[in-house]
Image (cartoon, helix red, strand yellow):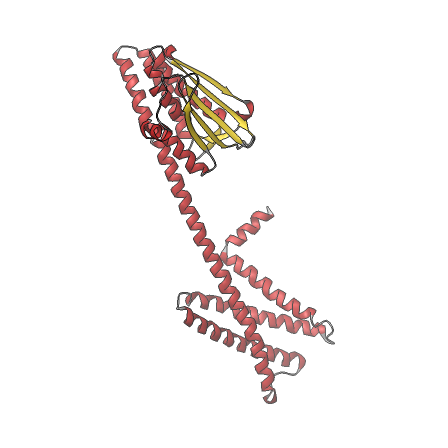
Length: 360
């Protein structure tokens, strides 16, 4: 609660200024009072110090609004104006301070004490100049932080837009295949199967809409969504499509990008299962290894002799899209490799940082 309150104060520029203003001038009075503890009339002198600090407090408030108005002038003009404004404020402060001394101690400005007044105004000029320097320094720092925050926000928005584009790029491809299959089932009078397929498609799309592309979900939820997709495909392939899932208990709780396995399975079905008359098998495996999560998707299809680069270029949108999403999310801290499966087929191996899902 206290941290939240202080954070709110620091983010509110106006409240932050007044906090620093009060703290700064209070500190000024306290430091001078500690230095005058041996003063014979320290109780009265404390009043003088408080009045002097209050005068400085009041005189610097107009400076804040004045500096706002001249903020955009040329640097050399700004320096000259700040020096002049600081000296004028110091001179007024010296007059008020001197009058306070005269009223309380019964000595102050007199014709023969012009040198004392001048020295007092110069001393206060340095204080006012320090206040001005702090004001501009803090103001420039806040502006730099604002620009940095804006740059980070713009980068984050661009990053999110890229991830959404990559994820949503898959939906039309998947929908086209599924709707085409439903249309075929209707044409051959398989209305019950078409209805089942439509219901499973509805559940899958609901899951897709409920999970943003930039959101990470537990691997178990990803597998649940994948099973919905596989149920749809099994309507098309029936017993020709066999799937083995081997996920360790620890890996089930790991956070992964939502719906990043579906395009890999779709790729295996398209280039492996669909090409085999007797159908084929897809094997999904995931386990934790040290600080990484290792995931593999393999099939027993005809395989390929193409290089990874050629496969990414010719393997449809699924492979390259998944790799691009991983790169956008994890930077260089991931791996995505394509190798031959044993005894035949293709294997996609993924390594990403292991992130534990929080249990509420």
